[in-house]
Image (cartoon, rainbow, N blue to C red; front, side):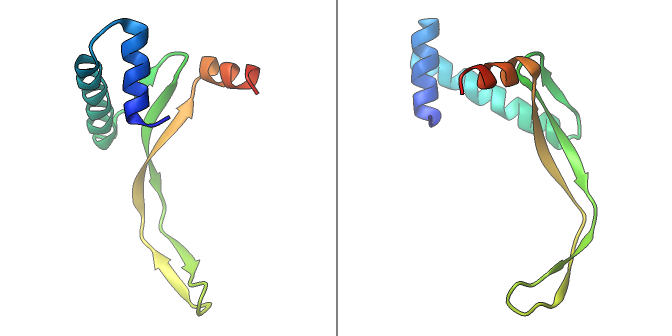
Length: 93
């Protein structure tokens, strides 16, 4: 499912116009991104949690030359599915 299909499905479920659903989806994603960028956590009980995780610096290997390369420390976004989400996916294998 892509963004357009998601908007159409949500509009059908809620009876709202697609433009309103699209605006809500944009506001939701923008809020999640800006909150996680500030290293704060966003939790939707039963659905999941988004947060920023620090990844330590490490040594990697160039696959073409076999030479060691330094990979800098960074902060990455992560998502952990909630129990309700996991249960629904498991039930519908």
